[in-house]
Image (cartoon, rainbow, N blue to C red; front, top):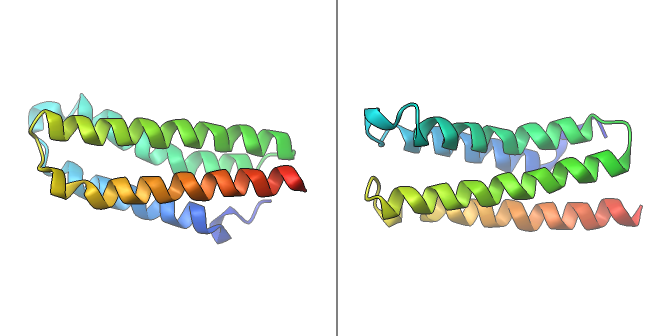
Length: 118
């Protein structure tokens, strides 16, 4: 499954990263090495793990990397909620990102089930 760039989930995850990077410009500079860095790394890990899993030699390994994607997506959701609770960004600014995270998780679960059946 080396054609990861053709996967809809990978493309959605890449869109998510772009949106996250754009949003991070709104956070205070003193969070550059704290939340900003953590959120960026977390978002990048989502499409990266999809690609790495797809590049592995077994279905079992691919599913394992997709499991990591679930964790990273949930971690990102938590961090986005945190920046609202810390009053760095208004809730409206993250609502679309949270929807995208939810969509990616649903797609991921469906992909995992599909792979397991083959």
